[in-house]
Image (cartoon, rainbow, N blue to C red):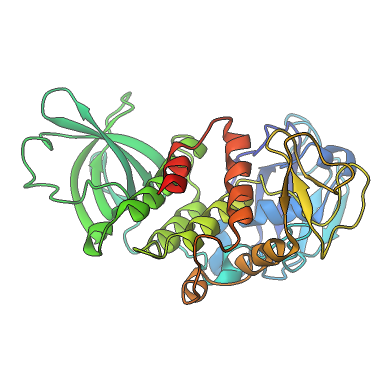
Length: 369
């Protein structure tokens, strides 16, 4: 229970979080440098609790309304078991798109779970079994394939599928990108690449019709996951989001799940700005148009907009609010043509590109479709 939780922006400050309901105590990195000055904040508590998905079965986590105690912020080497700090009690607030303090994926029908039925567990010396999403494959040596996987319990890993280019007997169609599988693989000491032994298909994009737009949309999800997540860094919430949204990407119905995934991905990574106030003058922007720039953080009013800014309409902000509160399966029942909330989709992709510091090629390919 003493694991470190990753820090989205590399801040050196830390919080020591104690969840009363389970008696669990863990050290968690602060998500923003502002926490060091403000000692504690509800937003940071929410973000930390969001990532403690293994506590979900005890009722601890985002949206549970469980009192949380936070120790004062400090450097990593200054805090040992909370000694010397003053304790503060905060309560997790309900979701609010304006300030982005949300109930997490639980609020939209993608609940956190305990260990999955196919959780990674040792089968033999170094062999493991677990849920995974195939992201990409590359030719490797003469007849092998190098495969990038997002596993639920171990995060993003790479492995070698021996003789996969020569024979489809072992893997069949399980190596197609964005296939959801139960993977059996073997880790070897001091080797970065695992050996892929067998895949059992849990869901395949090939079971339904495929066209250019659907292919580009699935590639968009794969590319974002590949670029945003470091290797060997488990992100259960991101994994659950990916499984839920990729199943909704169908021929003629790609624009809503792409927008849904992009917005939620920004939020889970800690990149989603608050949309309620101008970051320059503090003007209340709720109910009105906001302006965002691909080169700067936050949103502004029309008077303070930066060069190259784009408008995000009040209607699209309301759509974002719905996305953060509505299950993707429910939203998939609505008609969502290409033109609906196109500015919101551009905003969501722009936020990802700003923090990834690169263009997302599949997003451009999707727009050309």
